[in-house]
Each structure stands twice: as C-alpha cells, then as structure tokens.
Image 1 (cartoon, one colour):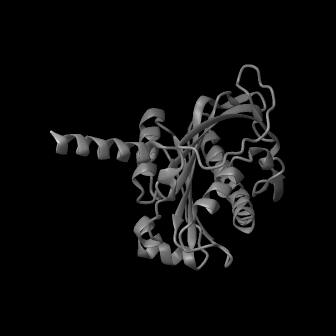
Image 2 (cartoon, rainbow, N blue to C red; image 1 turned 90 degrees about the horizontal axis):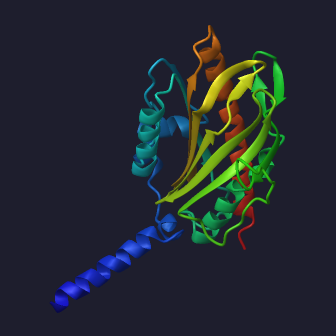
Image 3 (cartoon, rainbow, N blue to C red; image 1 turned 90 degrees about the vertical axis):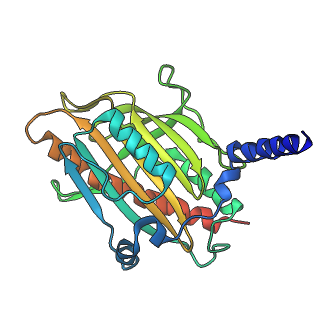
Length: 275
C-alpha cells in the first residue's frame, strides 16, 4: 500500500510539472537534422528558404518532425479543408552572445514576450511582385480586450512563458482592410507555436476573398541548438472566383516572409537584452 502511495505521489508531481506554465518550455530542442532531415538542414544552412504553395486539397510538405506542431497542423487541415496552403521554412542563427547552444529560461522568457509585442507588427513591409515594390502589410496592429468591445490594451508581458494564451488583435491591412484576428500562443517542449485565425471576413474591394474563420496561420519557433528553426504555414479556404486562389496563395507567400523577418528582429532583441 505504501509503495502505491509513493507511486501516486510521483505521478502527481510529474503531471504538475508537465502542465505548469513555462516549465515544459525549458526542455532542450531537437537538432536541425532531427527536425527536418539532413538534406533540408544543409540547404537552410547555406541560405535557402524553402517555400511550398499548394492548391486544391493540399497536404503539409515542409512541417518539421515535432509532435505537438504536427498534431496542430493536421487538426487544422482536417477542420478547415483548405483550398490554398503556403508553407515556409527559415533558419535563424542565434547571435554569438547567446547564453548557450540551447535556449535558456531567461532567453526563452524574453523571446516569448517579444513575440507577444503584436503592436510592433505595424509598419512591416513585404515585396509585391505585381506592383514591383515594397508595400506595408499592417498599417496598424493593436491588442484589444475582445472582438465585441474592441478596446485597445497594451501588449502583455509575463515573467515566464505561458502554457497557452489567447489574444485578440485589430489590424488594418492595406490589402484586406480593418479586421479582427484571434492569436493563440502555445508553449511546447523546445518550441513556441503561434496560431492566427480571422474573426472577420477578409475582403479585396467589394469582394469577400476569405470568409470568417477561413484563414488559419501558424508560426512555429523551434529551438535547434545554435539555430532557431521557423516554420510558417497559412491555410486558407478561399472563394472560387477565377484567379482568386492563386492571388491569395501568392499574397500569403510574400506576407509570410515579411512576418518571419519581423520575428528575426524580435529574436535579435530578445537575445541582446539578456541580463
């Protein structure tokens, strides 16, 4: 009987550790080769940034070997039934002043707060091939208290990463107009996973290009030793107008790259500000 009580105690402690905010975040990440294979890792190390754009009934092509991430991507694909899917891989090399090869609790806490700074998305730019120049993605970006009241609030800050967090954000997009999005943040072993879902319909002029809840974007930030691997995926159920799916696919490919560049700036700041 005593041994059963001891076993129950240790199981209780183990479950508490697994589900406590922030604690599971400090486990070491996988190697780059573990996450994406040797061939893909070699390509990323020499500066390539693979991108996959699919139409029809797309399936993930570039998603890393991370159980939590793959589970969320597959669940989203089944739930949404997208007609367009855009995936991008990007490799961020940690600066030489990073504390160690694997991110430390202090670095991860700072990085978590940097990616919560969603107001800093305002003004980021992307290259538009159709217009032959740089365009602003979000004119404004503001965390709000909810989709109904829409009162602006400050970007949140936490002493350690949260296991799960949901924020509502109002963003003025110069392509799709003024919209409300739900951002969800998840902390998993060796990773942050961020999802974005449109609460309002996205329109181009008078045309509804993407209905409510028909955009699901994911950014995964995966610790990989001296690197951070960034995986971004946008899944869209777009309207079936001639050329609309292709336009949406191309738009999200370039926009995703802009958001990744935003992340690199936040990561630079997170590593530079470690005390």
